[in-house]
Length: 273
Image (cartoon, rainbow, N blue to C red; front, side, top):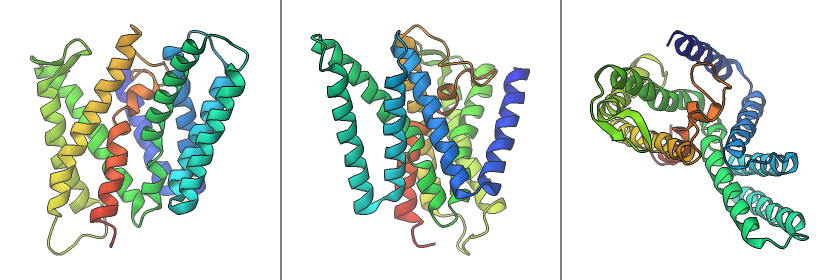
């Protein structure tokens, strides 16, 4: 527990330092680096034989996709399409001399799952930062996802009696899940009144209070999905990168579904601020 808390505090300090002191280029570089590390953890989960070429190919594809999402517009879609063409050509070249096409398709399916998952985790973070007041909004997302996860952990550890998904993640409980949803309402209120500098006279927007619980639920689904991936391989943690927390995926898994949804919400409801 002590190690988990210390690691959490260090991560919080580094996150705040990067968020409010790091340049846009540094934020982008950190996001791409974390995405690469996240894919390597995924790769270790499902591929028994390590392949530097596979990891390089997927890391490059993920980086190009993150840049494409950030670019947006026609050029962004062209960039994304070009990445997909690159991937298909690379797969053909890699498997052209091998006869086991069934294994090829299975490997491609796993790679594509890892690609989609990691892009969901990291691909929408820099577009959020690029929005007006985007760094405040990224802080809000972190409060909902990670603050809710922390609330679920402590409440579930102390009061959890009803398993949420016992065959996937035995320690998660309905009590912890409800605590995360409650935190997802309270923390945005604190963010709105004490953190941001563009408050409106009418008070906290209704849509924020309505959307925050949905983001919390999506974060929990993302968390459970990552637990399902690990359970399928009989592995407890995706890695040991973060002492007391496990791997990077174990810490940021809630972003996979929550961050794309949150970005869409910002474009719809906060696009005119």
